[in-house]
Length: 148
Image (tube, rainbow, N blue to C red; front, side, top):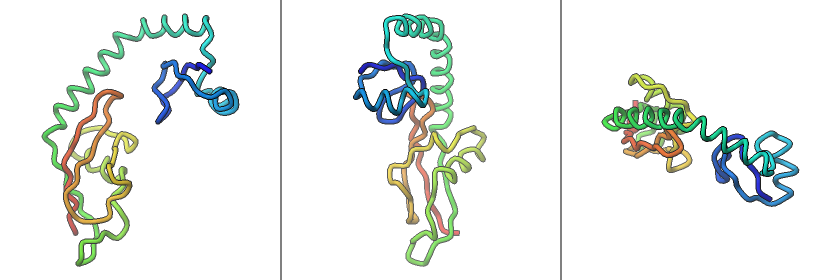
């Protein structure tokens, strides 16, 4: 079944994309939760008009994200955590902690925008993290986890 997504859904697609999913997934989950609508002919026409009107706004948002990425590219993060003498962290470094460290440097980032390659960072050392500024714009930042 073809549907039009009304919001971004990870591993499925972005808002206003037409995707093909199984009938049960669309009828029982996506459509009742207002995450998608059926891709009828009239819905496609409305979508095309909305995309046309929104295209210049999207271009401005993407340009802003690219300029933010160029400003952030020189940023090096250092996060201090409590750790054992062997380098193991008590707990882990979370995306929230990384977002707060970025925000202290004068940028506004939400924790949802931080993508950590490993699920949890549990050891002292150097890591590379990604920050998703736009659906097409990512910036990779070096991060050092140091013991306090």
